[in-house]
Length: 449
Image (cartoon, rainbow, N blue to C red; front, side, top):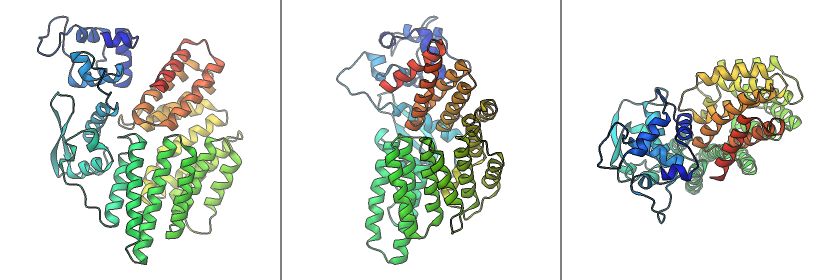
């Protein structure tokens, strides 16, 4: 109760925040918060008015109150450092992903790995296949955050297979940890690749250079997620240079498209069109899916001038959804029909037709898997922008609140920057609207943490 009061929240407000971050059926109510607060602590029994929270509930309350779990059970220990807020969330993510049918590369060779949670509350047993566990372990920092997770044997760092495996693990598990955790591991691996290049003959050197370009591409993307747009561009340029050295013209074209996406962030429609046109009309062949991505971004550039290039968007969708090949670079697997629909909806917003965008975005959000937090944050942010353009401030603020929760869980500063823009737009036009003010206050609180 003391920690709740310290945050300035009522029991009803705690229940509302809890349900927004961790929806459940039935939802939590102020009565549930009251039951937990009336509980007398470890060793005491339940009663009609007092019930102990589960371990999961304790983790979530500590996250809401920004304190230690031990603080809630035993009183505050001010000399102890606060744990990274990702620990409890990381365990929840691991559990939800392992239980999800959509987890990539699920294997049958299951083995039980025990994560020792450093709270004095015992252990959480998670059943993972060896492949799943190795990918999570390679995601950089899991063993450090949860002691005991490194009980399985790591891969031996030899050859291109190892380097590609590590990269694939980081790409598949990008949402498990903040970008900084991935960046430190990927940059360390890059140094290892460069050292290996000095010790192998020409053909192998070229292949390692290709892998370096793939690492640089993912680092560029992570920096964009960190809202470091200059760093994103620098690593995109490095990826393009290494790709040309390795003869990987598809990656070089892809980095031109990455530069176009950065130009979209700045509203520079002319540069967007120049870069995407150059990528599509390059003298070398690029995969149809990549050509479709270029088409979609080019349509985004035209939308900034008020024109919806419907035919171009249709062609982009067809290329992305039907142009796949077994020889496509692995990074193209992230560009699907959903990506094409998101670009179409964004075009409608930018061109002043928000109603059509709202229809597309709402249909996508309702069918999105719960574990895809970053994607949902992006869609909700765009939905908020669409509602704002349609002069529906309450709906825009509500979408923004949903996006804020998911953006914080996925540590996406790029989405947070878009939410800042949405809040500025809403406060500029509807500064006295209660829901708008609530969204602004929640965003300001999140920024202060």
